[in-house]
Length: 388
Length: 176
Image (cartoon, rainbow over all chains, first blue to last red; front, top):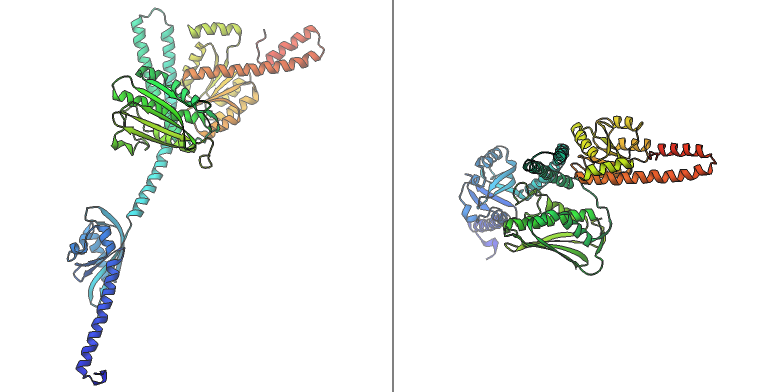
């Protein structure tokens, strides 16, 4: 039967079927776009009930489409009014956009989105529903927060540096006054010995507290100041021995044995001895603190200098407490400390790490709770372009 | 009896370090000066750069201890001008305001040492002694160089003696 032969009703039937097919095609095409888009796209009916959610939406919010279909679309937002307002505006103007609207994911997480809502109308201008396109801004937000953190941190550093400077002056005055008082006390004849020693102890305790203040201010300044390395030939064995000598008093007080294991021959590098010493002193005093904290008496620190990956590696191992799993990832963070007040400043390790990196090297640690910790750092034989 | 004993000794040798102490923190000046005097040093206090320059124009010093941040002329400038007046004077910078820029700046004016407040007293004393020794050595070297020139001038014994004494005095060396 050719088309010419068909009667009018048959013809309209056929055209209708064709239109349906086309409509079906267009609809599935649109559905395809809506459902497969990697952005969060949702569609609602005229009452604002959800009819579809894109794959991207499922991924971002953690819902399956079927869980949401038929629910009020404004429930997607952490504050329903955010979306209801936008929809009201869209109904009046045809479309509306909102920045930084928190949507609520299935697990309660907030997802910050920029949202556009477009009202859908049919040919006679009647509203049939709406489509919302949401752009996930979480990563951008996170990035911004990080950036703000960095800025705040730099500002904090400047502020702390200024305060440290100001505090150094009164600390110095107190130290001189105590020193003078000790001199007077020492040279005074005819005072009872018990009084003298009691007084001397009190003065030493004051001195100890000024030292404590000084440790904080000097470390802070060390962190704030970007001291460029002074490159020179360094005997690493010397650096290690000097640092041990520097802490001699504490080492003896804790009754800790310290052993240095170094290779035969010269262990040299072009580096900055003062900065390296600072790192060594920090690592050694941490080792001492870890041993003291364990509180079983004695204890051992081994400092090894070994050749590794074309660089010298210095390893400081202690028989202390070890580092709890929970603290490990924070150990190099500024102002993070697990020590008691007055002991830890949360500056030693971050400063040490920064110094080592400045010298073109790297720093890390191995630890076992209850058995001890090894902090190691590696420095190149000469300044690398990066570190120099 | 360390400090007292050494004071007697140093005074006898007439080589006790002559220290000019410059700091706007008056209490600090007072106590540090007292301690250094007990150490056997001769100490003059100045609470500003201007005062220090005034004093240094009439009195010889081996070592100046300079604070960096002071009202009026600051530590770096004070140090520079002191060196102009008394080239044999060594400067130790002692400051709570440590910054690498100022440290480099004072280094450019040949600071003998740069110490951050509060410094260990023993370390400060050690540095003063070393700076003093260096100062005396420079004076002595200069004395010997000039002495050779003098001996070529063909002066009579008495005139030579006067000239030598005058030279020692001008170089800030003890006359005996």
